[in-house]
Image 1 (cartoon, protein in one colour):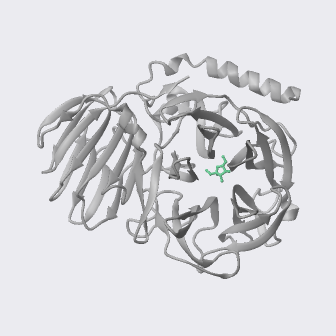
Image 2 (cartoon, rainbow, N blue to C red; image 1 turned 30 degrees about the horizontal axis):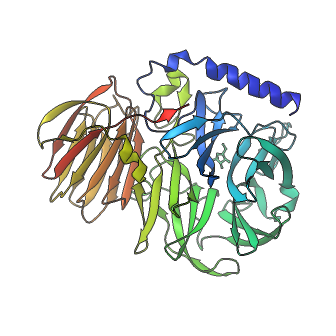
Image 3 (cartoon, protein in one colour; image 1 turned 45 degrees about the horizontal axis):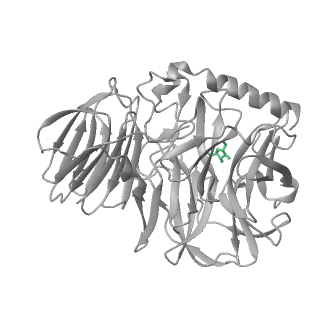
Length: 474
Ligand code: FRU
């Protein structure tokens, strides 16, 4: 460990230990992973390794609004009891000195191979940091699960195809037969978002194989790609930037969703189905997936978005922290649609079971799961008389009636044929809504003034409410 690494680690420990004001913060979440202090963004390096789940995340402990990025690290045997392992990946080398950006984990030979982007911003007056002035290095860090054993720069800007800007990043790596593949998100010089596909025989030397792109331009940059098989279909998941709003679609500043890939994407013999958004709420971006030991394809997203300040805000900034990861969701395909279900493990957090009658007002602790089954007609659920969750005339809507709790959040909708089941997770300052067993999902933050909130359901379904226990985090 060089002395910069040592001092950075020490400084982070000091500020993490100095977070007393977080103890009586009513917006801290009970069953979501959060930054110990400061800023969190993308989930990184998701994997199941030697009997434990490992979740890394983009972390800026020094600044509640981001800037210099590290990787923070949590692990768990059961996705409920967690251990925080500190900050294993630091921007401490010339090839990653302006941020250890997002990436993924490949597990082999009892080791974790962590591929990520080393961000470098050169100083110079005339740089725009899009076409010049930025290094986007593809780096391999090898870890024993606790510590980084080595770091090696594998690809620099010189190695990428010539018609690209400097925006190439977020390697997702996987093994197929005896070959390794990697997808990277990129922005071409014509400002088109595309995927770069690489192949390797040894995990170290990578050869460019193909570009995966949509026929028509869909945004100027594709971030955080993921490519995986799900129920015999090939899914390309991306987080595109620069997509125009269209009816109820693409309402957030940046999007995340997927294409079904038909044909052979390793040659040019492929086509992409229509892009589908994976979450319809105000606060969701940069999802990643991994396979666990039960062969579940689990997705975790960033419960937040970058660059939202012109639209809405997060009140936790006042408290010195911002953002979280979503609850893990298990994916399956029905027809051509990905369905997302909260992991079963969350059931172990349920305390008692309360029956909630329709058209009555309840005052409840703001940490619960609400299950509504056999919904036959329209339904409206109100939280604090301000957050309105509604299905009416084939439209599902999440909206804020005033600016009180939403801090600028307004309304998001999706058209669906019916709504017969809702599963809603509320965690002090977050709401995740699963419609019809995950056919659609809405994730949003909100900022109530009390730990207790008013709940009212106007509908005709069967309502069950489970107050929830907290994760344990060591
Ligand atoms: C997505 C993203 C990634 C990048 C990381 C930096 O939110 O912009 O493309 O690697 O965040 O923190």
